Length: 539
Image (cartoon, rainbow, N blue to C red):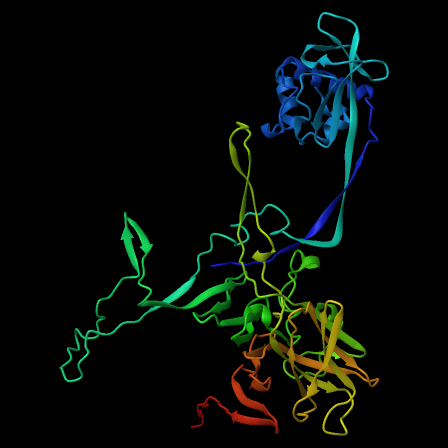
């Protein structure tokens, strides 16, 4: 079973590495750095490794406990990095240069000439300019100097670039639901005859109905429960292939390879479309209803993208005209959306367990990180090349139609191929029903197609409204649903032909009227009224 999730976060950029403090060892810095490095040399701790996890605060505390007068408050380098890491960037005890990382600064001991044994150094008194010099133990000749090489200055800025926390690098598979969530993977049905085969014999109602030669699906093997099912009797009839971040089933398939899929909206709380004989990535529905549903996430700038996303046109969502629900898309000139076209390969995703050397022994390898690729994310809408699809929508123009069909709009499907493209203009299907007309077109997707675009245009100088846009495979059966975003009551259900059934409620939330949209107009199917009998208090 595969579990999928998608999360996007705002990226914070760190700017930038500077060397403005290079060589600037002031008198105050000398008074702090000199006793610190005297302690490191005497205690043989110059070459502390990064894997030791030492902080500058811990080093300073050990130095003071050893009797060294170290004050970080007088040194800008030490005070700004008091909680930073301390470790050696070089490991050669006899060399020309030794470098240490102190928080976001790099401090070095540099030999005057040739190599020097760093643990054999002894410091001189601070110079009048704040410099720190060293001689060899037992000698007096200058052999090395202490200096600040560079310090990083970081400014945190918010960028509009977003990245996936799942595929961007190392990932905790349990944190993001890639592992640890157990859900039903497949369901099996047992096919076999009952013990009673004769129609003339009496049946014992208390004992009848048992299965002849029943074979258990699970069996114990060395105290372990294993699946040893008889495939001639245990037949699987459904397999879960996709779930969303809240655990709702998005896609399954049967033994014949037929897929069933569903789209969820309203913050993944309710199904907005279901389809038989279609995959999740092959279906799309947009009613423009739930873009403002739910609270504002902390990472609103990098919200999880929708499978069929019209977020760019949110300012064009109109509440004055709607086929179903409360919103439609108003187009004054043109609007469109593009989706990629993919092949049929579906290899599934896996976790890559990356090994690395451990801190205790370089010859021993342990788990360094876990990573995965984009196949762990929910696929966006992407029709399969070589298939036939159906594109439909409801259209209304702001000016009344003088004939049997609108002529001031264009609903086009653009398919791109390498070095070529083709455009299909969707045609009206059926009469205008209370101002709205259904457009539908059957489109054959070429084998080498790379993308598909839906283009909606107003070509007569007045606004055009689009609503209930649907795309699904030609041999699929699709239904879609519209809810009231304020109370989540079902407002409309669109059938296989994209015709709506409307649900109307009274102030108490009781269903009072059911209307059906047909080629001859909207017809009331049922209407009910109810009231509580009031008690007569008259005497």
